[in-house]
Amino acid sequence: MRKSIKIVVYHARQCDPKKCTASKLKRHGLIRLVSQVKLLPKRAVVLNPLSEIAFSPADRWRIENFGLAALDFSWEHAEKALLKNVRGTSRCLPYLIAGNPVNFGKPTKLSTVEALAAALYIAGFEEDANRLLSIFKWGHTFIEINSERLESYAKAKDSTAIVELQKSFMQ
Image 1 (cartoon, rainbow, N blue to C red):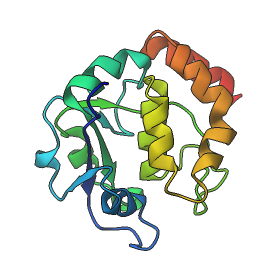
Image 2 (image 1 turned 30 degrees about the vertical axis):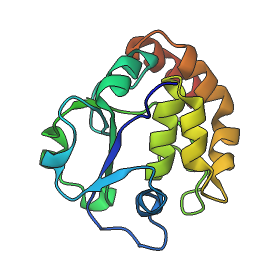
Image 3 (image 1 turned 45 degrees about the vertical axis):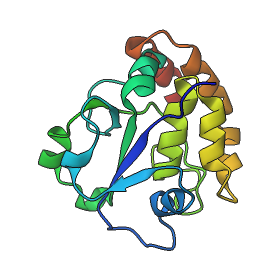
Image 4 (image 1 turned 180 degrees about the horizontal axis):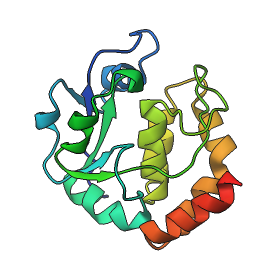
């Protein structure tokens, strides 16, 4: 049996507490929340929408060894400078459609749990992805509406292949 993946989320407390997926994941003991960016694991993969490198299955080794991190705050209030200086290995997720009730059907408007689940799924940790999503009534919807994209991304060799696949899905 493999060790569980370390998942850490920087939580800026800018979202509605009743709708915050990161807080719910924390309550269920599935992630650790930190209130300062500097507390993110040093060599973890950080899901960062400003990264110029796409997340891919090639990031699996880093997740297994150093963990996965996400940034949870309102993108309207996102500090561009802050995001550019996040410690860890920043990666942006490829094109996916939100399944959460707040942004349902909107491309790239993923909740924190959707972002984490997408990364885990693409890296080959499908069981872990489903575990995170299972605590939300709508969680299965994310996988269902993105199944073709997620399966294709999971078979990609690297970031370059992800970008090519993404182009075809965006058309």
